[in-house]
Length: 470
Image (tube, rainbow, N blue to C red):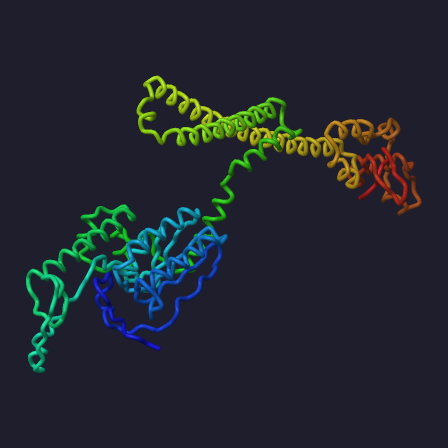
Protein backbone atom coordinates (compact mmCIF):
# COMPACT_ATOMS: atom_id res chain seq x y z
CA UNK A 1 0.00 0.00 0.00
CA UNK A 2 1.29 3.46 -0.93
CA UNK A 3 0.63 6.58 1.12
CA UNK A 4 1.38 10.24 0.51
CA UNK A 5 3.82 12.00 2.78
CA UNK A 6 2.27 15.09 4.38
CA UNK A 7 4.99 17.05 6.17
CA UNK A 8 4.42 18.89 9.41
CA UNK A 9 6.52 21.90 10.36
CA UNK A 10 10.08 22.57 9.17
CA UNK A 11 11.52 19.74 7.12
CA UNK A 12 15.03 18.44 6.56
CA UNK A 13 14.04 16.65 3.38
CA UNK A 14 14.92 16.44 -0.28
CA UNK A 15 12.27 18.73 -1.84
CA UNK A 16 11.17 16.25 -4.51
CA UNK A 17 9.90 13.98 -1.76
CA UNK A 18 7.29 16.46 -0.56
CA UNK A 19 3.84 14.96 -1.05
CA UNK A 20 5.24 11.89 -2.85
CA UNK A 21 3.83 8.41 -2.24
CA UNK A 22 5.80 5.87 -0.24
CA UNK A 23 5.17 2.23 0.74
CA UNK A 24 3.22 1.86 3.94
CA UNK A 25 5.39 -0.76 5.65
CA UNK A 26 6.57 -1.25 9.22
CA UNK A 27 10.30 -0.79 9.86
CA UNK A 28 12.46 -3.77 8.92
CA UNK A 29 13.65 -5.71 11.99
CA UNK A 30 17.36 -5.76 12.78
CA UNK A 31 19.35 -8.36 10.92
CA UNK A 32 22.80 -9.90 11.14
CA UNK A 33 25.44 -10.01 8.43
CA UNK A 34 28.97 -11.13 9.20
CA UNK A 35 30.37 -9.03 12.03
CA UNK A 36 27.58 -6.42 11.84
CA UNK A 37 24.07 -5.92 13.11
CA UNK A 38 22.20 -4.32 10.22
CA UNK A 39 19.51 -1.66 10.70
CA UNK A 40 17.46 -0.63 7.69
CA UNK A 41 16.17 2.98 7.45
CA UNK A 42 13.83 3.68 4.54
CA UNK A 43 11.28 6.26 3.53
CA UNK A 44 10.40 9.63 5.09
CA UNK A 45 11.41 10.20 8.70
CA UNK A 46 9.11 11.50 11.41
CA UNK A 47 9.65 12.02 15.10
CA UNK A 48 7.05 9.61 16.41
CA UNK A 49 5.76 6.34 15.00
CA UNK A 50 4.08 4.40 13.67
CA UNK A 51 4.48 5.91 10.22
CA UNK A 52 4.48 4.91 6.60
CA UNK A 53 8.22 5.61 6.61
CA UNK A 54 10.34 5.41 9.72
CA UNK A 55 10.47 7.30 13.00
CA UNK A 56 13.34 8.58 15.10
CA UNK A 57 11.86 6.80 18.11
CA UNK A 58 11.96 3.44 16.34
CA UNK A 59 15.46 4.06 14.97
CA UNK A 60 16.82 4.79 18.44
CA UNK A 61 15.17 1.68 19.86
CA UNK A 62 16.63 -0.53 17.14
CA UNK A 63 20.11 0.94 17.56
CA UNK A 64 19.99 0.51 21.34
CA UNK A 65 19.01 -3.13 20.77
CA UNK A 66 21.93 -3.56 18.35
CA UNK A 67 24.34 -2.08 20.90
CA UNK A 68 23.30 -4.81 23.31
CA UNK A 69 24.21 -7.58 20.87
CA UNK A 70 27.59 -9.21 20.31
CA UNK A 71 28.58 -8.08 16.77
CA UNK A 72 31.13 -5.25 17.00
CA UNK A 73 29.67 -3.20 14.13
CA UNK A 74 26.32 -1.40 13.89
CA UNK A 75 25.53 -0.95 10.21
CA UNK A 76 22.83 1.45 8.98
CA UNK A 77 21.47 0.74 5.49
CA UNK A 78 19.84 4.02 4.48
CA UNK A 79 17.51 4.83 1.62
CA UNK A 80 15.60 7.92 2.74
CA UNK A 81 14.89 11.45 1.43
CA UNK A 82 14.91 12.82 4.99
CA UNK A 83 11.96 14.13 6.98
CA UNK A 84 11.03 16.17 10.00
CA UNK A 85 13.56 18.37 11.72
CA UNK A 86 11.94 17.79 15.10
CA UNK A 87 13.92 15.11 16.90
CA UNK A 88 16.43 14.63 14.08
CA UNK A 89 19.58 16.17 15.55
CA UNK A 90 18.95 14.73 19.00
CA UNK A 91 18.55 11.29 17.47
CA UNK A 92 21.83 11.64 15.56
CA UNK A 93 23.71 12.52 18.75
CA UNK A 94 21.96 9.73 20.67
CA UNK A 95 23.01 7.20 18.01
CA UNK A 96 26.63 8.30 18.32
CA UNK A 97 26.52 8.23 22.11
CA UNK A 98 24.94 4.77 22.26
CA UNK A 99 27.57 3.26 19.96
CA UNK A 100 30.42 4.93 21.84
CA UNK A 101 29.10 3.72 25.18
CA UNK A 102 28.74 0.16 23.87
CA UNK A 103 32.11 0.20 22.13
CA UNK A 104 30.49 -0.40 18.73
CA UNK A 105 31.70 0.84 15.39
CA UNK A 106 29.00 2.76 13.52
CA UNK A 107 29.01 2.31 9.73
CA UNK A 108 26.55 3.60 7.11
CA UNK A 109 25.85 2.34 3.61
CA UNK A 110 23.66 4.35 1.24
CA UNK A 111 21.82 2.33 -1.36
CA UNK A 112 19.50 4.96 -2.87
CA UNK A 113 19.06 8.26 -1.04
CA UNK A 114 20.62 9.75 2.04
CA UNK A 115 19.36 13.30 2.03
CA UNK A 116 18.79 16.00 4.60
CA UNK A 117 17.56 14.45 7.89
CA UNK A 118 18.73 11.02 6.73
CA UNK A 119 22.23 12.43 6.21
CA UNK A 120 22.05 14.03 9.65
CA UNK A 121 21.76 10.50 11.04
CA UNK A 122 24.48 9.19 8.72
CA UNK A 123 27.08 11.91 9.25
CA UNK A 124 27.84 10.81 12.84
CA UNK A 125 29.05 7.39 11.63
CA UNK A 126 32.68 6.30 11.66
CA UNK A 127 32.49 5.35 8.00
CA UNK A 128 30.04 6.16 5.18
CA UNK A 129 29.97 4.23 1.94
CA UNK A 130 27.57 4.65 -0.95
CA UNK A 131 26.82 3.21 -4.35
CA UNK A 132 27.86 5.36 -7.28
CA UNK A 133 24.26 6.13 -8.16
CA UNK A 134 23.20 7.11 -4.63
CA UNK A 135 21.99 10.65 -3.95
CA UNK A 136 23.76 12.31 -1.03
CA UNK A 137 23.33 15.72 0.60
CA UNK A 138 20.48 18.24 0.50
CA UNK A 139 21.84 19.55 3.80
CA UNK A 140 19.37 22.24 4.79
CA UNK A 141 15.91 23.06 6.10
CA UNK A 142 12.73 23.93 4.26
CA UNK A 143 9.33 25.17 5.42
CA UNK A 144 6.12 26.15 3.59
CA UNK A 145 3.47 28.74 4.37
CA UNK A 146 0.13 28.52 2.58
CA UNK A 147 -1.86 31.72 1.98
CA UNK A 148 -5.43 30.66 1.12
CA UNK A 149 -7.02 34.11 1.46
CA UNK A 150 -7.49 34.54 -2.30
CA UNK A 151 -9.17 31.15 -2.56
CA UNK A 152 -11.36 31.99 0.45
CA UNK A 153 -12.49 35.22 -1.19
CA UNK A 154 -13.26 33.44 -4.43
CA UNK A 155 -15.31 30.92 -2.54
CA UNK A 156 -17.06 33.66 -0.62
CA UNK A 157 -15.51 32.62 2.68
CA UNK A 158 -14.47 35.11 5.32
CA UNK A 159 -12.38 34.10 8.32
CA UNK A 160 -11.91 36.05 11.51
CA UNK A 161 -8.90 34.90 13.53
CA UNK A 162 -9.16 35.67 17.21
CA UNK A 163 -5.77 35.48 18.88
CA UNK A 164 -4.12 36.41 22.14
CA UNK A 165 -1.00 37.80 20.51
CA UNK A 166 0.20 39.35 17.28
CA UNK A 167 2.18 36.27 16.28
CA UNK A 168 -0.38 33.66 17.35
CA UNK A 169 -1.86 33.37 13.87
CA UNK A 170 1.48 32.96 12.12
CA UNK A 171 1.23 30.10 9.67
CA UNK A 172 -2.56 30.03 9.51
CA UNK A 173 -3.53 29.67 5.83
CA UNK A 174 -6.59 31.89 6.31
CA UNK A 175 -4.49 34.89 7.25
CA UNK A 176 -2.59 36.90 4.62
CA UNK A 177 1.18 36.74 4.40
CA UNK A 178 3.06 39.57 6.01
CA UNK A 179 6.73 40.46 5.91
CA UNK A 180 6.97 40.24 9.69
CA UNK A 181 5.69 36.66 9.71
CA UNK A 182 7.98 35.59 6.87
CA UNK A 183 10.94 37.05 8.76
CA UNK A 184 10.03 34.97 11.80
CA UNK A 185 9.83 31.79 9.73
CA UNK A 186 13.10 32.62 7.94
CA UNK A 187 14.91 33.13 11.25
CA UNK A 188 13.59 29.78 12.48
CA UNK A 189 14.75 28.00 9.33
CA UNK A 190 18.17 29.69 9.48
CA UNK A 191 18.67 28.67 13.12
CA UNK A 192 17.75 25.04 12.42
CA UNK A 193 19.95 24.99 9.32
CA UNK A 194 22.88 26.44 11.29
CA UNK A 195 22.58 23.60 13.82
CA UNK A 196 22.46 21.13 10.92
CA UNK A 197 25.61 22.65 9.36
CA UNK A 198 27.41 22.47 12.70
CA UNK A 199 26.47 18.80 13.17
CA UNK A 200 27.79 17.83 9.74
CA UNK A 201 30.92 19.95 10.06
CA UNK A 202 31.91 18.55 13.45
CA UNK A 203 31.12 14.96 12.45
CA UNK A 204 32.77 14.96 9.04
CA UNK A 205 35.69 17.30 9.67
CA UNK A 206 34.43 19.87 7.16
CA UNK A 207 34.34 23.61 7.73
CA UNK A 208 30.88 24.87 8.60
CA UNK A 209 31.13 27.55 5.92
CA UNK A 210 31.88 24.87 3.32
CA UNK A 211 28.82 22.88 4.35
CA UNK A 212 26.68 26.00 4.07
CA UNK A 213 28.26 26.71 0.68
CA UNK A 214 26.79 23.47 -0.67
CA UNK A 215 23.49 25.40 -0.82
CA UNK A 216 21.60 22.18 0.01
CA UNK A 217 22.72 20.56 -3.27
CA UNK A 218 22.74 16.79 -3.75
CA UNK A 219 25.79 14.86 -4.94
CA UNK A 220 26.39 11.50 -6.60
CA UNK A 221 29.41 9.29 -7.07
CA UNK A 222 32.79 11.02 -7.17
CA UNK A 223 31.17 14.40 -6.48
CA UNK A 224 29.94 13.15 -3.10
CA UNK A 225 33.39 11.73 -2.40
CA UNK A 226 35.11 14.99 -3.32
CA UNK A 227 32.70 16.99 -1.17
CA UNK A 228 33.67 14.83 1.81
CA UNK A 229 30.16 13.56 2.43
CA UNK A 230 31.13 9.89 1.95
CA UNK A 231 34.33 7.95 2.57
CA UNK A 232 34.10 5.30 -0.12
CA UNK A 233 32.07 4.29 -3.17
CA UNK A 234 31.06 0.68 -3.59
CA UNK A 235 28.40 -1.96 -3.17
CA UNK A 236 27.02 -3.32 0.07
CA UNK A 237 28.74 -6.67 -0.52
CA UNK A 238 32.06 -4.89 -1.02
CA UNK A 239 31.57 -3.06 2.27
CA UNK A 240 30.82 -6.30 4.13
CA UNK A 241 33.89 -7.99 2.65
CA UNK A 242 36.12 -5.09 3.72
CA UNK A 243 34.63 -5.05 7.23
CA UNK A 244 35.26 -8.78 7.62
CA UNK A 245 38.83 -8.38 6.35
CA UNK A 246 39.51 -5.45 8.69
CA UNK A 247 38.07 -7.36 11.63
CA UNK A 248 40.25 -10.38 10.89
CA UNK A 249 43.35 -8.24 10.56
CA UNK A 250 42.62 -6.32 13.74
CA UNK A 251 41.97 -9.52 15.64
CA UNK A 252 45.28 -10.96 14.45
CA UNK A 253 47.22 -7.81 15.33
CA UNK A 254 45.41 -7.02 18.55
CA UNK A 255 47.02 -8.12 21.76
CA UNK A 256 45.23 -7.02 24.89
CA UNK A 257 46.71 -7.11 28.35
CA UNK A 258 45.56 -10.66 29.10
CA UNK A 259 47.20 -11.98 25.95
CA UNK A 260 50.42 -10.14 26.76
CA UNK A 261 50.44 -11.61 30.25
CA UNK A 262 49.78 -15.09 28.89
CA UNK A 263 52.59 -14.69 26.38
CA UNK A 264 55.04 -13.50 29.00
CA UNK A 265 54.13 -16.35 31.35
CA UNK A 266 54.65 -18.85 28.55
CA UNK A 267 58.02 -17.29 27.74
CA UNK A 268 59.20 -17.65 31.32
CA UNK A 269 58.59 -21.41 31.02
CA UNK A 270 59.84 -21.88 27.45
CA UNK A 271 62.81 -24.25 27.60
CA UNK A 272 63.92 -23.21 24.12
CA UNK A 273 64.63 -19.66 25.28
CA UNK A 274 67.84 -18.67 26.97
CA UNK A 275 67.88 -17.76 30.63
CA UNK A 276 68.40 -14.01 29.88
CA UNK A 277 65.23 -14.00 27.75
CA UNK A 278 63.24 -15.76 30.45
CA UNK A 279 64.59 -13.27 32.98
CA UNK A 280 63.48 -10.36 30.81
CA UNK A 281 60.02 -11.89 30.59
CA UNK A 282 59.87 -12.20 34.38
CA UNK A 283 60.90 -8.56 34.77
CA UNK A 284 58.21 -7.47 32.29
CA UNK A 285 55.60 -9.42 34.25
CA UNK A 286 56.71 -7.76 37.45
CA UNK A 287 56.59 -4.32 35.85
CA UNK A 288 53.06 -4.89 34.53
CA UNK A 289 51.90 -6.15 37.91
CA UNK A 290 53.40 -3.07 39.57
CA UNK A 291 51.70 -0.80 37.03
CA UNK A 292 48.35 -2.48 37.75
CA UNK A 293 48.80 -1.96 41.47
CA UNK A 294 49.66 1.71 40.95
CA UNK A 295 46.64 2.17 38.65
CA UNK A 296 44.39 0.60 41.27
CA UNK A 297 45.85 2.82 43.95
CA UNK A 298 45.42 5.86 41.72
CA UNK A 299 41.78 5.02 41.07
CA UNK A 300 41.16 4.66 44.80
CA UNK A 301 42.91 7.93 45.51
CA UNK A 302 40.93 9.74 42.83
CA UNK A 303 37.71 8.38 44.27
CA UNK A 304 38.68 9.64 47.72
CA UNK A 305 39.71 12.98 46.27
CA UNK A 306 36.34 13.29 44.52
CA UNK A 307 34.54 12.62 47.79
CA UNK A 308 36.63 15.21 49.58
CA UNK A 309 36.55 17.65 46.68
CA UNK A 310 32.93 18.66 47.09
CA UNK A 311 34.07 21.56 49.19
CA UNK A 312 35.39 24.23 46.82
CA UNK A 313 37.34 25.92 49.59
CA UNK A 314 39.31 22.73 50.23
CA UNK A 315 40.01 22.35 46.49
CA UNK A 316 41.32 25.91 46.21
CA UNK A 317 43.54 25.46 49.29
CA UNK A 318 45.95 23.06 47.59
CA UNK A 319 49.50 24.33 47.65
CA UNK A 320 51.83 24.67 44.69
CA UNK A 321 54.01 21.96 46.24
CA UNK A 322 51.13 19.49 46.12
CA UNK A 323 50.53 20.31 42.46
CA UNK A 324 54.19 19.65 41.71
CA UNK A 325 54.04 16.34 43.56
CA UNK A 326 50.95 15.30 41.60
CA UNK A 327 52.65 16.23 38.37
CA UNK A 328 55.74 14.24 39.34
CA UNK A 329 53.58 11.22 40.20
CA UNK A 330 51.82 11.46 36.84
CA UNK A 331 55.18 11.57 35.09
CA UNK A 332 56.40 8.55 37.07
CA UNK A 333 53.26 6.60 36.20
CA UNK A 334 53.64 7.51 32.54
CA UNK A 335 57.29 6.42 32.61
CA UNK A 336 56.30 3.13 34.26
CA UNK A 337 53.70 2.51 31.57
CA UNK A 338 56.23 3.29 28.85
CA UNK A 339 58.90 1.08 30.42
CA UNK A 340 56.42 -1.79 30.73
CA UNK A 341 55.42 -1.52 27.10
CA UNK A 342 59.06 -1.28 26.08
CA UNK A 343 59.96 -4.33 28.16
CA UNK A 344 57.17 -6.37 26.61
CA UNK A 345 58.25 -5.31 23.12
CA UNK A 346 61.91 -6.16 23.80
CA UNK A 347 61.04 -9.55 25.24
CA UNK A 348 58.84 -10.35 22.27
CA UNK A 349 61.54 -9.33 19.82
CA UNK A 350 64.16 -11.36 21.71
CA UNK A 351 61.92 -14.44 21.75
CA UNK A 352 61.15 -14.11 18.06
CA UNK A 353 64.85 -13.76 17.24
CA UNK A 354 65.78 -16.80 19.31
CA UNK A 355 63.10 -18.91 17.64
CA UNK A 356 64.41 -17.85 14.25
CA UNK A 357 67.93 -18.82 15.29
CA UNK A 358 66.71 -22.19 16.54
CA UNK A 359 64.92 -22.80 13.26
CA UNK A 360 68.04 -21.83 11.33
CA UNK A 361 70.20 -24.17 13.43
CA UNK A 362 67.82 -27.05 12.78
CA UNK A 363 67.95 -26.39 9.05
CA UNK A 364 71.73 -26.35 9.14
CA UNK A 365 71.78 -29.63 11.10
CA UNK A 366 69.51 -31.24 8.51
CA UNK A 367 71.80 -30.12 5.69
CA UNK A 368 74.88 -31.39 7.58
CA UNK A 369 73.24 -34.82 8.13
CA UNK A 370 72.48 -35.15 4.44
CA UNK A 371 76.03 -34.14 3.54
CA UNK A 372 77.60 -36.70 5.92
CA UNK A 373 75.35 -39.53 4.73
CA UNK A 374 76.08 -38.73 1.10
CA UNK A 375 79.81 -38.41 1.75
CA UNK A 376 79.91 -41.81 3.46
CA UNK A 377 78.64 -43.47 0.28
CA UNK A 378 77.65 -46.75 1.86
CA UNK A 379 74.39 -46.00 3.66
CA UNK A 380 71.29 -47.80 2.33
CA UNK A 381 68.22 -45.65 1.61
CA UNK A 382 66.22 -47.18 4.47
CA UNK A 383 69.00 -46.51 6.96
CA UNK A 384 69.48 -42.99 5.56
CA UNK A 385 65.81 -42.15 6.24
CA UNK A 386 66.24 -43.38 9.80
CA UNK A 387 69.42 -41.36 10.33
CA UNK A 388 67.76 -38.18 9.03
CA UNK A 389 65.55 -38.24 12.13
CA UNK A 390 68.43 -38.65 14.60
CA UNK A 391 70.43 -35.87 16.28
CA UNK A 392 73.53 -34.81 14.40
CA UNK A 393 75.94 -36.13 17.04
CA UNK A 394 74.28 -39.55 17.00
CA UNK A 395 74.41 -39.65 13.19
CA UNK A 396 78.15 -38.92 13.26
CA UNK A 397 78.74 -41.74 15.79
CA UNK A 398 76.75 -44.28 13.74
CA UNK A 399 78.47 -43.35 10.48
CA UNK A 400 81.87 -43.82 12.09
CA UNK A 401 80.91 -47.39 13.00
CA UNK A 402 79.82 -48.27 9.46
CA UNK A 403 82.68 -49.43 7.18
CA UNK A 404 83.33 -47.18 4.27
CA UNK A 405 83.39 -48.76 0.78
CA UNK A 406 86.95 -49.41 -0.53
CA UNK A 407 88.08 -48.46 -4.00
CA UNK A 408 88.71 -51.35 -6.44
CA UNK A 409 92.42 -52.15 -7.06
CA UNK A 410 94.11 -54.43 -9.56
CA UNK A 411 96.12 -57.22 -7.93
CA UNK A 412 99.79 -57.87 -8.64
CA UNK A 413 98.90 -60.92 -10.72
CA UNK A 414 96.72 -58.84 -12.96
CA UNK A 415 99.51 -56.30 -13.41
CA UNK A 416 102.06 -58.99 -14.55
CA UNK A 417 99.79 -61.25 -16.55
CA UNK A 418 100.42 -61.53 -20.25
CA UNK A 419 97.16 -61.59 -22.07
CA UNK A 420 96.93 -63.86 -25.05
CA UNK A 421 94.65 -63.33 -27.97
CA UNK A 422 91.17 -64.51 -27.40
CA UNK A 423 87.70 -63.87 -28.72
CA UNK A 424 86.13 -63.65 -25.33
CA UNK A 425 85.50 -65.85 -22.37
CA UNK A 426 83.60 -69.02 -23.24
CA UNK A 427 83.60 -68.29 -26.98
CA UNK A 428 86.50 -70.53 -27.94
CA UNK A 429 88.45 -73.43 -26.62
CA UNK A 430 91.74 -71.47 -26.72
CA UNK A 431 93.65 -70.11 -23.72
CA UNK A 432 91.64 -68.08 -21.19
CA UNK A 433 92.53 -65.81 -18.24
CA UNK A 434 91.97 -67.00 -14.74
CA UNK A 435 88.63 -65.67 -13.30
CA UNK A 436 90.20 -63.10 -10.94
CA UNK A 437 92.44 -61.70 -13.69
CA UNK A 438 89.57 -61.64 -16.17
CA UNK A 439 87.40 -59.78 -13.67
CA UNK A 440 90.22 -57.29 -12.93
CA UNK A 441 90.57 -56.59 -16.65
CA UNK A 442 86.86 -56.06 -17.08
CA UNK A 443 86.92 -53.61 -14.21
CA UNK A 444 89.91 -51.77 -15.72
CA UNK A 445 88.22 -51.58 -19.13
CA UNK A 446 84.95 -50.33 -17.62
CA UNK A 447 83.02 -53.38 -18.72
CA UNK A 448 82.09 -54.12 -15.14
CA UNK A 449 81.75 -51.92 -12.05
CA UNK A 450 82.23 -52.77 -8.43
CA UNK A 451 80.85 -50.90 -5.40
CA UNK A 452 81.38 -51.45 -1.71
CA UNK A 453 79.17 -50.58 1.22
CA UNK A 454 76.23 -51.80 3.22
CA UNK A 455 73.54 -53.55 1.20
CA UNK A 456 70.77 -56.05 1.64
CA UNK A 457 70.06 -59.29 -0.17
CA UNK A 458 66.93 -61.00 1.05
CA UNK A 459 67.08 -61.16 4.81
CA UNK A 460 70.90 -60.80 4.89
CA UNK A 461 72.77 -57.51 5.52
CA UNK A 462 76.28 -57.40 3.94
CA UNK A 463 78.88 -54.92 5.17
CA UNK A 464 81.75 -54.01 2.81
CA UNK A 465 81.08 -56.84 0.33
CA UNK A 466 81.21 -56.04 -3.39
CA UNK A 467 78.14 -55.63 -5.51
CA UNK A 468 78.46 -56.40 -9.16
CA UNK A 469 76.62 -54.90 -12.00
CA UNK A 470 77.02 -54.11 -15.64
